[in-house]
Length: 250
View 1 (spheres, rainbow, N blue to C red):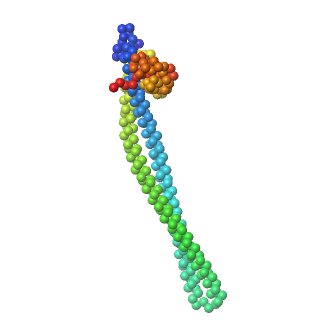
View 2: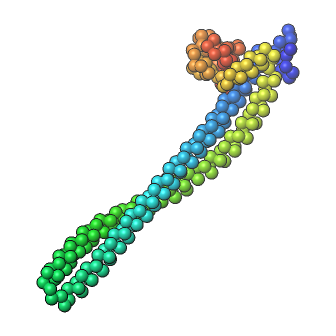
View 3: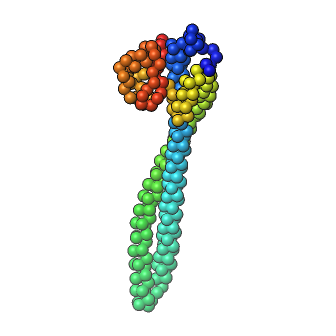
């Protein structure tokens, strides 16, 4: 049973050139459909990658913030120790005033010497912590700047891809509808073959490429390659069973 709409030969079959040209149109639609689906798949994957990347920048910024806070807490603790030591040192010095007992005076002097040494150590530690705090603050600022920049850059890319995704989705739907319309016009045997191949995924009709099948890239017999390229006869690849047709003629 032949599909409606195709010119027939005197014997009731479909004109071979008409069939080949119809298959060539199907090949173009399938190629465009594959491109649209590739765009959708790529953008979905890229969107996930961008979200994962942004999450990494968020985590880095949070860790830098936590590191800065921790360094500041340690510095404030050291400053409190310094103030407490200075207070104790002042108290011990005050206690030496009016002390007449030699042993008591010497004991206070030893305590004062110990506190002075402790104060020097604490001040050195505080200076080192101050450098750590400054480095942590710089790291925090860099991490936050990187986070903001990546967020802006990533969002701009996502916005661009959203427009392309919408266009590709609409194109895919239209291409699929057009493709089904053309497939329905094929003679029954050809239609079933095309549908069977499409069920396995990928195109059922491909364009000849330098004498080879554009689907599996197996080299066609020389005459078949020429016939496919010139649109002279219906060619099926022996390797993948796809129809191999000529490229669009401009």
